[in-house]
Image (cartoon, rainbow, N blue to C red; front, side, top):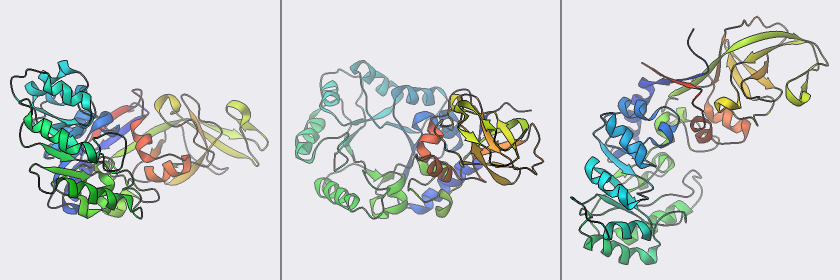
Length: 359
């Protein structure tokens, strides 16, 4: 028997999703975002599966170095930039691009002596108000980068959307207008579109798109699914039944006696819990997929186990496979039941969950 719980990752789904994203944005290069351990799918796994992506976006230098050590030769971009001046030579050595979004990062570049210049993406704050230089700062910062010998020319340009996952929110159009007006006459590549921009704001696709969650077959928009866009879920989170129990009406189950049966039934115990990253706050009724049907979680999720109501006539057996999300049960739907977003579910799996790459 394979170890459980495990996240089964479909190589074919990842590759097909990349093809589909290229169809959606045919005039753009693809910066596949693989931060947070490839959104829980395995950093090197994903990069090797979609090795024909034009580049990879990462949050940390350590992630980029792991890809280089794993033989990945494509363009790498640090989306949060570099945090320590002593790391700049590593960017040169390993040919890693960096975002500059803060004065401290600009000063590091200006005050370093490097063996070769670094490719820089200047981040503009067009309305997200999290990272990036304000519109009023742009001209000065851009000129300083042009004047800096440690910066390869041309300087590339980017921004990030605040509300692209709300297709009716006009802030995205305002951000696009502000960014385009600011940089319209400048050389260099541009990137605006994250997953939501790519799928819902085609006018934002530009030179590069930066799909994160969409690469893994998941929609960034509440109430939507990746399959609506021709994408396929790349992860199936599965475990096994480790017990099947007769359960009488009036009996409770789990910590706090939180749920009590209103009729005789059978309960199944599944070997997964919050110690594996499955949310403790999953409410009663959150579905799992077992033997071709949905069955609801009952009682509280504990560290290593959760309990499901199988029904009085159930014939399920110890060892039967349980899918927490995947092809049969969309992670977007599970997230809605729990009151969170699919991003959180796939990225918060703990090291106890075996990541198993499937052909």
